[in-house]
Image (cartoon, rainbow, N blue to C red; front, side, top):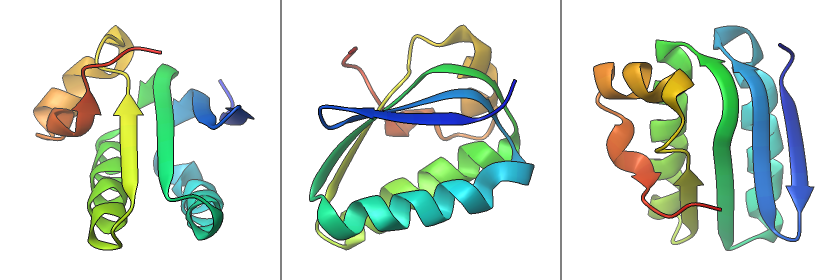
Length: 100
């Protein structure tokens, strides 16, 4: 499934597959988003596939945002399609317990 990013009233929602092949697009997109936003809520609840590199990308993004005194809340803890890879890579701690 193709990667899709939607923004609705400050909520950014990613759906489809997030893999090594489309991380460049995500990096450019979120670099642009954080130029104009201090706080971002990102939902990955509709991601159907994620590889280890993508999980580590989200962890790096999470840390970089915090280092720049901004806030990134990533929602997706209940997504069973990505739960295993997030746990395996040790990146599940970045997921907020809140649901959208």
